[in-house]
Image (cartoon, rainbow over all chains, first blue to last red; front, side, top):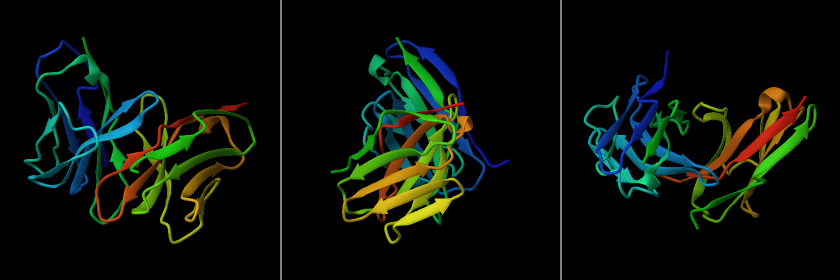
Length: 112
Length: 112
């Protein structure tokens, strides 16, 4: 089954404790992206990657890092999480040949 | 200039009625306008999308109307059903980029 998977689905952590949210897709898509969803703000793009080793900032990249060492994986790293990064995070992927994005199931992160 | 403004924030419609959600944009470089549907606990899923070279696109009960001169586009859900109850997001993507700008979302409730 074609899908985007994220782990963990739920995470509660404390301020300053480094964490990684993983994202993997099995559709051989070149493009992957991370979004955060907050009430009243919709989805905002954090980082995106056009292919292996090629990444760029979205609209809200501060406090986040990404890497794309393999085509199927695109982890999101929070090196020093803060409470304002409490949010619902989505990973998405798409092919270069299509605008259609496929979203993962989401990761709900709470930073206390 | 990168914003996509979506209205209304919430919408209640009777079963069988027409649901209309509107979006407006400023950036004339946008050339792809998708609508996403999101059910609670799930990631957004592409519902229907349009390019600016057409004024309307219909897929089943869902229609996008696009007004290039007014820089507005809207989603019409005909014969709305309780199963359509979800959050809907409009989005826009500038030509030649991998960026996506989302609206703030509309929570639709269709009463049985």
